[in-house]
Image (cartoon, rainbow, N blue to C red):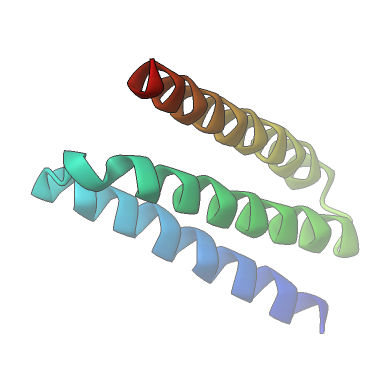
Length: 93
């Protein structure tokens, strides 16, 4: 069961990062605000799953790495939400 967590989390991260890279390649900048939020939410889910998997298999290097990635992605989500709120406030003014 613990390996299923690792595989699902890894697949989620690959799809998340791959779709973000594809959108950047296509130049879909007008849609980036919406996708940025989805990207960070999926990245948090994927890295949190990998964190759990790393703990289950007792791999301390990847536990530390995935914990740092969860914090990093949470910070990215917070920044994206803050920028979105500031843009809405600027548009309303």
